[in-house]
Image 1 (tube, rainbow, N blue to C red):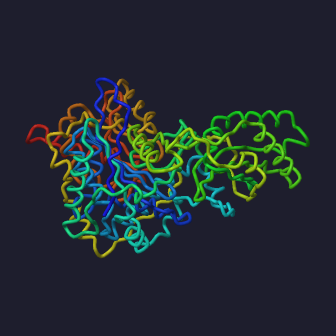
Image 2: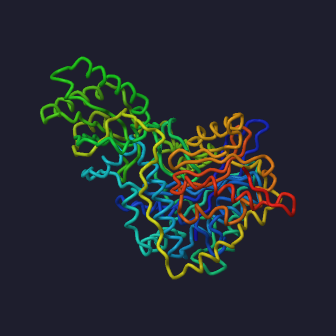
Image 3: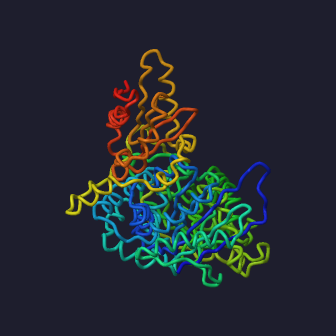
Length: 570
């Protein structure tokens, strides 16, 4: 039995705005070292289920229906959310999510396509960012008892997850005692929405799957959601299924060899995060000024400071200092003294750390935040003093490790080069007939709410692809090649859809065939989106990017505009 909680809020919506129905499944999903199994389990929840068998259900719903469904995984917890202004659609989406959460029936083909293809492509995309690559290099070499367990996994570590590992993990953690559903809706009675959600969930359980009906429970038995995210304003939701953070858009280069650097780490309680992030830029500027003055000995004693603000298993965050690669033991000691001196002079106080993740919709963040304040004692009085030692006490202990680091601030000379391709092809297995059968499955949310399907619901094109979309639009105004709708850089591409095809796109997008490059694991993301009053088909981290121009043309050529004539775009 899962816990369903209605979380009221006191702030009223601005006039003229309708607050959507919002639901968040909070699932306790502990990380296992750096394996990434909790991340893979999140992905597999959208790989169909006995109640909603179509693999492309999520993509069709997010593209054409007035709702948003997504998920994100942290160390210890995964959030699955849904938003819609339509009550009936919202309840059906809750049922769809729950059916996927509790499903443990997957084919080997689907498992390998998601692990070897989609997940590896996602992680490869992230690892192509210098800041991200440097951070995970430090995490992988950190030998401290406080070291992070990287829930997202790495592009090589996820390939070590076996099919049985996945099934065992889902059976252990994706069950009633580890799942809490938070719901909220404007002008909605809490008992009513709890009842509707319970009935929808009970129908899934009634089919005899691995689910049990939901009901309201006392909040002392609620699944505890870790308070582990206070994201910076620069974090960006790159693509629809992105779970992991990318900071500055610097790209790593395969031609730049990393150097071995010592990294010093001070672990401090998460409650100091707010004040530390406010002064992080000040700390960096002071360190830079020390480099210019070459204090105490030489600039070899200095390096690069940053804050890793993810919360570890002990409720701590990491203050990192990457030493100059030329620094010897004496220089590192001097650097420690300088950094601690800078940090000691700051006015850093403990404050309650409330959930913030700018990748998530504001209503989802507010729901999680309000839930935490109601159920976690430390947030029942947000401005009450916290019983912690002074900040400076935590600077007495430092842990040092070595990691291969790329030089910070170095930019890839060839920005448009493809990102390294670690993708491994899926293996042919005996149950391939089952996957062929799934290709013909109907997206039920789209079928059941056909009257709500509309291109007006198309999401905005991911920011990562804006540059390509602008190029495609500009080519339409060019006298040299006005029909060049396709633009590709490396593993990313867009295809501008001519207006004469817009009316027929709904039928195309609701079909399983359109989504096969994604469900087969050939790319990280595939979709249809709008940008500057144009509609684009797009792909990201796609191993077959160079062939998608022809693929788009062939896909649109199947549209029978004149009821008897098939038109092929130029």
